[in-house]
Length: 261
Ligand SMILES: [Zn+2]
Ligand SMILES: [Zn+2]
Image (tube, rainbow, N blue to C red):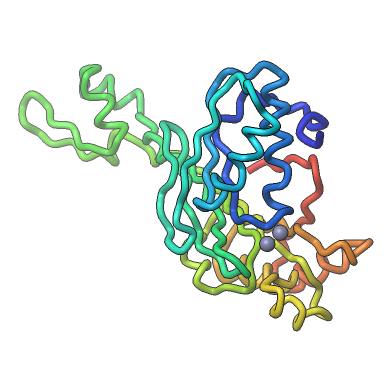
């Protein structure tokens, strides 16, 4: 239902990444899968998750989604290691092992490296043939017919940096995460509790807002989004303020909001 409220197009979803098998992270799947079927989807849908999900979801699919007009594919990953689990021409997805009450992984979504910007004047000046443009954009030098080597940095400007987004939920404060998310553009980190519930955060393997901010600060991320608040907080500004004391560029996640990366 929330998906439909956002007016995003269901049919553009080909892959779904599930961090762990607590209900608040996967109860919605069967409804989403069923709705997509009712709306006439035909393209396959791949679900990336811990291997146990397949065994849990298949009986539900068999019971509730007979005659589903599209195929569901399950691809499992090992939440204990960081590895590339998805890749296409434009994006790469890497798992981020987290520390929670069950095997859990976050996900790093990173654009593939972009081409360097070629300088048109230099192409004309050196009369560079079309067949060499691709390799120059990829960073290679150019050799003229006379055998002179023109260094790539004379021919191009650096590529626009690729953008990155890390999703980390659910997790206790976990410093092993820091090197894996170094410098990302946007970090979503759970902040279930405020400072006053530090002990509870520890026992339930969740994070406080200040702990999320500390991870953001140590990893030099550009922007932090906190979310996954405990229902006890009517006003989440308490969490926002605690996070901002540690990492200024923090915002509160809200369902349906969109964030420019
Ligand atoms: Zn959980
Ligand atoms: Zn959760």
